[in-house]
Length: 355
Image (cartoon, rainbow, N blue to C red):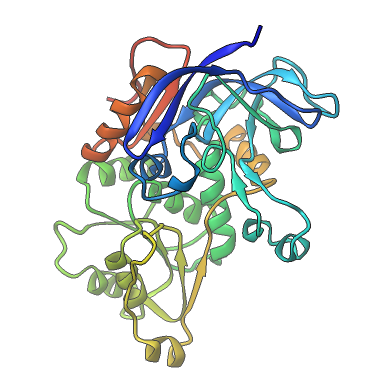
């Protein structure tokens, strides 16, 4: 008899249904994972609203997860039933032009677990065994569910490659808080974070992730303020972590000559931001982009968490039962005071982490 599980299925744009579906069957190169916790990402909101990946519907989203190995494929090595694991969600072909160059995030057949294929807003999820990373006991359950977004922060930091004692501006105080923390960890000085939420900026101050905190609701000209802080030169690096044309335009204006704009925030397809090519040519400004963590970014983030180099827990808001996922999506869209919510299939009532 086929084993069944609960899963939240996005059947069509704006329609999510809690259903009983078959537990995924694994092949010899996969493992079955019992989901313990899965973070809700902005990408999940965009999938639900039809802004992203709607061509893959119907399916179960959810990619920021950790769980316990339930079943192991015959070819799996270094894993056993009962292991706590997180999984690299990126699935690449390994043979296309980009993969052979080591540029796996550009793979021509690139897919991501929980974004293009069934994910972890369910009781079970399957993943390639080679993509799984064992989580040590020193990493708590909530932080374990935040490994995936932290890999995106880490990869972005690697691409931006800020040097010791260089100035970094981070636009955005959601995941931008961790971008700031990563820049500070790398020795950037000063680190400047810009946001529009007093509560989030206060949290960033509490976490001591930056040297300057700019509230755009109180500062008339953000670009001028960044120029003032950087002695009129502009920032060496500006990381955009909001995802709007307006904030990208700000980034282009506040980066110094010879500086780098790191593009992280996702803007909807078809939307554009304006900049003066004159400034980029004569000023030798540069733009780099990064979209996700991949491969051993998982191992490196786990190591940072294990040795307490970064602590994302103050950002955590609530854990909700699987049944309340759709309600949580609507809350995240309307209540900007909530920073991070998780889904846990094993609970029946909400858990409030940082009130």
